[in-house]
Length: 635
Image 1 (tube, rainbow, N blue to C red):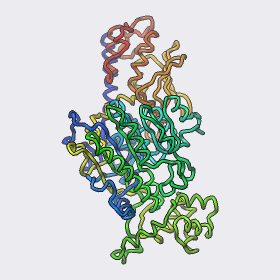
Image 2 (image 1 turned 180 degrees about the vertical axis):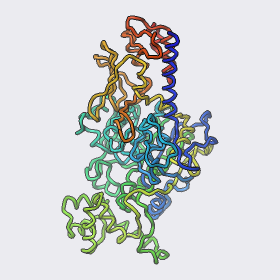
Image 3 (image 1 turned 60 degrees about the vertical axis):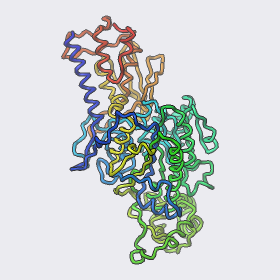
Image 4 (image 1 turned 90 degrees about the vertical axis):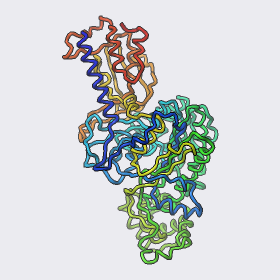
């Protein structure tokens, strides 16, 4: 009997060790490009830690984005003077990054593939030295936000995109593709965020997908304050969790309106600075501090379109939000502020083919007037033309009204000719007109692979908090883990355990059912013993009575992917085992006999033994003990 139990214990401990190993493995790039945390920077045992960490990301912003915005402003940016280094932006399978793996690396410290949201990498022709194990592929990894929440801190995200878009989504959710925004939004609601501000109403109000959930109604039932416009944002009070979904126009795909359009087209929408001001007020009431990620999302959108005026408005809006943060932090001695981009978009240059011979004569008074005349985003102009028709006269009228420029028939026709092949119609507008109306150059409508600037602020006596030098996304994450006292590998092992492994030692049946947006895990011990877990939710439902137990993390479903040899998986918090055991003790659930322990008796008529209590404790490595055993409910 004892030998059998020891064998089972050894197997479970081996599973735990494997899970931990999968969680903590950091995949390295070739040669000397190892993505490792600098040991000299590890002060995780020090009491000298920031109470608050504010992580600002401006999506798609390269060096020259800052330069043209500074010239347009006519004064230094608020973040000028805070430069501390550069960030290298390659991802697992490309030297040019997508926002999803970039933000995931910032959030988790794990390098991953294109389009993945805070899950482990998959094998592709890649920059990684080693092939990810099957267990590691698409495994969710805990984020800085989740780690801070388990420390008792308040947590939040603020963005001008959908709150479930790639960058904020990587901090609040886990998905095998960034397009699964319904799932990411649902995880955000069930993550217990204290603040979630941005756009994405199409994912927040009643869904058109298979499960038809109304996340706004659910959030209100959970006690959230919900704001839908600037006036309602102002009424949010401290002491209660808050969600604000503020987009008011469909033309920008339910993101917030570009700043260049906002004042008259979207007057009910708050600015990034206004959302950030309110977020700080709500989060700062927690005596343990907070972690918040603030994103200026649409520099990237504008740069994809090669829309210079819109990107300037977005970057200056981000810079105003940074001023709010910096002014607040400078009044304190307990806050670290990190400001960075995830990658460069568009390949912007000051100068283009028109300036090849005249670049020494390009006074700012030649460069800026055309940009100052622009009062509409290319997105809005393209939307108007989609509705009115792409004729020469309509194109000329819209460019005159929105950009203050009179263009020839030939140039208007050039715009029209580019529309059919354009990924987005605004791209056609900018591609045809940017080089002719401005002195700016663009190399692509996609991303580019250069390093991006790193900025940071820390109090005078805590300068070691600041990240410095040339870092990869993952190295910046490791720096923040050390400063915040986090171990995200351990947090991953605590929050995201493959349910098949977690419950493997019990005589239960594990099945999944439901549609792709509402997958359900059933753990059935027979005779009415049932535990149900819904994907994206932090809940375990016990038995037919439907008792709902709140878990400390959300459940994540991963679809089977034959290409990467990944079976269907359902990840749940390790805590679920203890809570389920405590609820099922009177029904007696037992370890399943194994070939290695043929004498073990799983007959329900035989009560638990003290050695089983030790067995339960052995698999609950994250928790102090099994409550069921401590309360003498077993054996």
